[in-house]
Length: 146
Length: 324
Image (cartoon, rainbow over all chains, first blue to last red; front, side, top):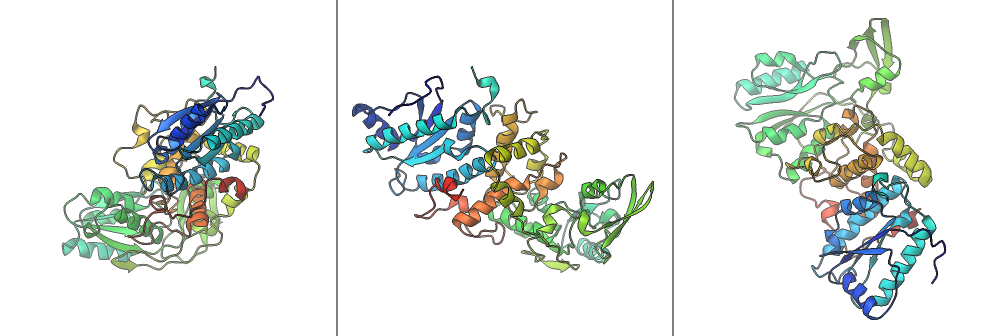
C-alpha cells in the first residue's frame, strides 16, 4: 500500500494487551509483515487496563489517532476484562464523537496472538484513515507540539 | 411547610432523630441553603420553598457517621440519589429517617433574572403550599410577575416523576411539571456536524472556571480521594491552562458517574457559569439506554450498574460510527 502526502506523519498510539495483541504485533514482526512506524505501541496487561483517561491523555499530548487492541471477546486472559473494556470504550468513543472529535480517530480491534496479518492490516488501514482525516487540531494541546 | 416543621419538632422531641437536615433561609429570598437543625428552637429558620433545589442526599454520607438518626427531607428526584448511595454503601439507611417532601418544580433564579427582573426584594408564590401559576416579584423598580413554569429549572421540565423511591413518611403534595423529553437536546446535538458539535462544546466549556462545584455537589461523586485533587494529573485542581483541560475534566467527570448518574441535574444547577453540564451525563444515559437496555440509576438498590456488567453480545465500539 502507498501513502500519499509524505509530509504529514501522524502520531498514532496503539494500546495492545499483553496476551494477544502485543504477541500479534510480535508475530507480525517475525513474519516480516510491515506496518507504518507512525504507530507507537503501549503494552498494557489487559485491554481492561485502558483507563478512558489514557485515551484523552494521548489526544492531549498530540496523538492524531488512538487504537486499542485486545483479545477477542471470550478469549481474555483474565476471562472477562475485554467485555468491560468494550462497554467503556463504546461509551467513550460515543462521547468523543458527541463533542466533535471525528469518529475515525478512535478504534478498537480484537487481534489474537495468531493474527499477525490482521495486526498489520489493521494498522495499515488505521494509519491510512488518519492520513485522510489529517492532523488532529481539535484536541491537541498546542504546547506539546514541536 | 408548617406541617413539616411540626413533624420535625415532634420527632426531635421524642428522640427518634438527633438532628434535622433541611434548608434554612439565606440572606436573600431566593437562596435557601442546606442546614442541620439540632434543636426545636432552631427550626424557626427552616424553610422549604421553590428555591430549595439542593439535593440533600449527599449530606447523608457525613450524617451517617454521626451519632443517632438524622431526619432528612428528600424531594422525589433526590430519593434516586439516596438509593444509589445505599447501593454503593456510602450511606447508612438505619441512620436516616426520610421524609419525602412534595415538589411542584424548583425555581432557577437565573431564569428569573434572564427575563429582565432586577433588584429583587421579595418573591411571592414560591411557597410549596401556593397554588399560584405566577410568581409575584417585588423589585426596587416595582412589581413584576413571572410564570412559575418559565422560572423552573431545566431538570424540572423533564422530571422523572413525583414518586418517592424511598421514604419513611411523606408530607406535602406534588404537582407534575414534566413538559419536555429529556433527550431532545442531546439528540439535537448528535445530529450536528463534527465542526458544529465542537464549536458548541468549545463555546460552552470555555466558560468553565474549574471551581469544581459540579463535582462537589454531585451525589454520585462521593469518592474520598478524587483524581482531580491529584497534583500528578493534568486537570488537577487549578485553572485551565489550555482548552483541552476543561474538556478532559468534564468528560472524565461525566464518565466517572456514567451508569450511576441519576440525572438529578445538580451539576447544571450549581454551575456559576451556567454551563449545561447535564448534556454530558444525559449523553451517557442515552447511550446506555440504547445499547444496554433502559436503566435508571437509583431506581432500586440491588441492580448491577451498566458499566460493571456485560453481556456476551454487547455492541462493538465501531457501532458509534455506524449509528451516524
